[in-house]
Length: 190
Image 1: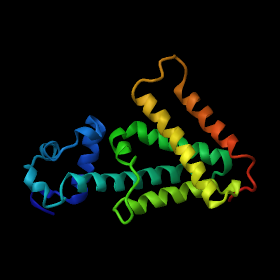
Image 2: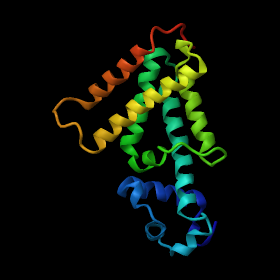
Image 3: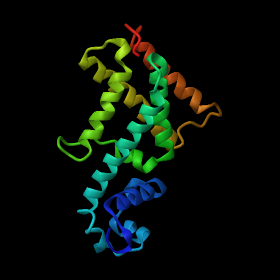
């Protein structure tokens, strides 16, 4: 621990809170330092600049999404598991909009966020196991699901749903429609 008890994890957590409150685009080292009650140069004892903060924030956020999805799908399979995973994803995006924004870029190979991104993809592959898709087809299905979920999150974020109907019901129908496109599950996973 350094002066004032700062740690790398504490700096990244504060960055996530700042991003959630003000938007990822407003995350700067000077704002982060002010939030932590230190001068900007003090942050360099824990991070290598804003790029490092954003990479670490993405890695941390991917682990959080993974944990949320994993908890949601525990004991579920088939359409029920996909819907639970998608709902956990939406809930995370709503509760942590800045952290959610941090995970949208594909990580570079070997980067800090590559491993948790791969783990999240693997988790979605496990959720899709009842459909016995080829590895390529599973990736295409995950991309379709992610694209639909992200599109919904973004439209909701910018106020794109003005009609007074439940957006949760719309989201449920969106996910169920995608799942129907996967076909009939070949088997039930345990």
